[in-house]
Image (tube, rainbow, N blue to C red; front, side, top):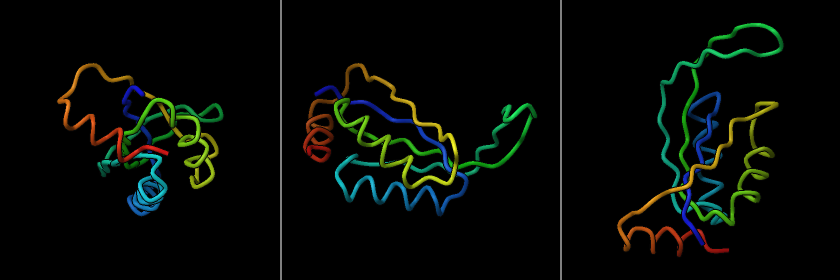
Length: 105
């Protein structure tokens, strides 16, 4: 299975930690990085909005994306959460082997 990153955002660091921990505990991701302090400016329901968000980057297998996305939607406070798969190119073989092993069903 090809390794991928899944880029997501959350409304708070606590929500990001809760989602990330669940994804790793359930082996939907080998690891989730959490980056707090992002400002987002976006259009929602006809208005331009601005707010603080927390970025999550999950490291997983491409074949786990749909299950991971469904789990994030179930846990997330947003009506339409950002859940984007980013295919990876080359990487260090031992790291990619670890990623595959830790995100195996």
